[in-house]
Image (cartoon, rainbow, N blue to C red; front, side, top):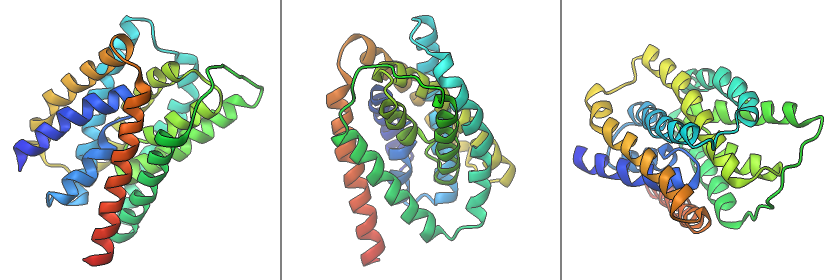
Length: 246
């Protein structure tokens, strides 16, 4: 089972880095199907996000593809709220968390499949407060579900009118930092598997670097995002089926 998780971590880190979001959104349901408890799967997903998105961020910084002004307001709120979301896992029954995850998968999949962005950069005097709100929502759900919040941050920033490639660079940094604070809370709660974390660490780093390089140099992210959207829908349907027929 460990070998399968490592392989899936590599493939999803590559694909979801191209799509501009952390791969934990796919890793967590997959590990759950493999019999890994949610309490272990969620911090593992955040850890994979930290590594893969950090690699992506280093690449973006070196190639001047990171918009820090766009990222900063979202980072501040997401980073602050993510540990609260992680802590709230103790307050919600597992079945409730699973249904929230299902809704999150459906939302993120819908945005990947059906939302068509306009390449523009609108900015208003209300932009910062909106960005802070996006970060707060994404941080809470990212910590609660272990997904990092990229599935909310990326489409929301595009909806605000920012260029998709600027958004991908900003989202990588936001997800890396907010995942770190959420992961720290899970460490405090004792919900980690060191062996599993070590197994996925190197492939997550490699996957984040490869995915970001492919996005900027080799291919358009549009078709990849649509493929990711289909996968997220399939994950959601599989989880719904498991809830109904268990």
